[in-house]
Length: 393
Image (cartoon, rainbow, N blue to C red):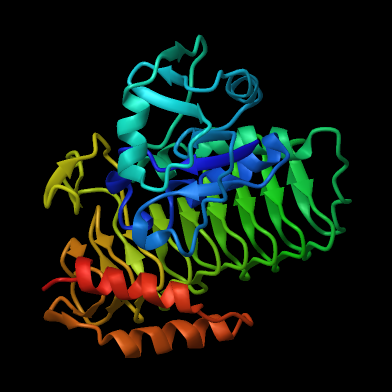
């Protein structure tokens, strides 16, 4: 049986992060949606997504395919229900299609949703959780960290707490190879804290759970990290951070505040970058929705920066509440830039121009090269599509 994670019909509400990945590769909690499914399925998964992404994220279908909604949080009960699904049937919860079992290889995400809508359905008895709106990524992070912590640490023994580290509470798990230096304070009474393999938590760091630090990540000296926060693999962070999800390999290495935010992969926030997450009048925050080309209500009082992959900002950059920055933006200068910064934008509050595609890709490769990585030909083709279709014309 082949397991394929398909994009939900709400994928465009998860921009800018779904510009460069299927929904299943969004991180929420300790794990990405895909990593959680694969851990419980004990098998690798393919992807059914937009055509321009499909060369980067392969489908790998066969004669017996279980298509699973990549926006749904996996759990043991769902695994059992999905594996019991008959061929030619769909598992649903209300209007949400959770899974479809098919002997057909469906190569188009549009064709898949048409196919799924015509199948006989089995209604799931239990509840599900899913990411539907882009702000759900940080809003659901508290519960997701707790669930992932229980899944990952079940039946396992944490590494010892190093000398000179102050820990309050019992829900701390330290993976092998992690270095937590003297003077760090970790409080798990409000939620669990997970420290990944080969991480470095430097002197004077203060951590309050629920919180996760991914493998090979670095937390700089004197950082103040509040839950519910995820520092993804390979990230470097410092300053004050509250309820933020960093996907992977991104940096906010210096002082400055970031709250109720999502930062994609290969981003860099310059020293003293500060991001507002609360309006002065305490009003509901709206954000720009690329899919409908207008501002939409979030229902939230707190919402900060949503930054797509490979975007960067210079020192002392200020972002207003609910700012959305697309893919591969270069943001700098004084004052607040616009609350929506389209992909491949160059500039700031005094005006934006188009970031030259070749220069943008050179910058991406230089940053990735510092971690021993480079963009593949298929990834370059993907970014070219984003440049042609989603930048400001």
